[in-house]
Amino acid sequence: MKIVNMARRNGKTTILIHTAYITGYPIIVYDKQRAEQVFNQSVKMGFKGVEVITLAEWGRSKGYGIYKNVLIDEGKDIINEALKTILNANIVGITMTEPMITLPECEEQKEVKKNE
Image (cartoon, rainbow, N blue to C red; front, side, top):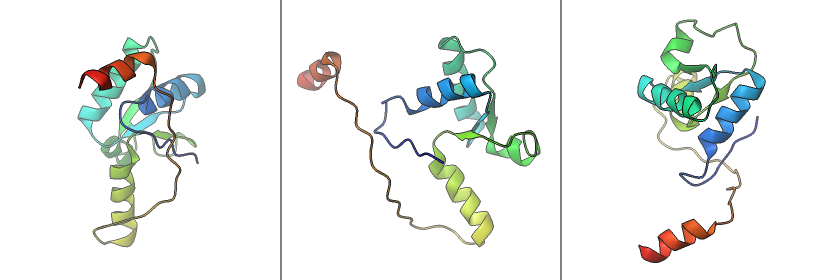
């Protein structure tokens, strides 16, 4: 498993959409609103056929047992739900050691920061 740990608005979901399109793996998201956002983004990118499944849909067997590999967008909420289920306890805090991927800023990003 690889964790794509980057700052907001740096292309994490875009990476997943590309991967889903190439591999055929579904993207699991926490809720219906996020599913619509990710699906619409994939269509705007020209990637038809990317399957986006909510955690609830997955739990109702929409993908359970069909897929051996999945991609997860915004994993914090899904990890929390999984751990709550396994541990039967509310997760209050968690640590992880994953390096943050930083991308070099393009000129447009530098200009926006300069004008803020």
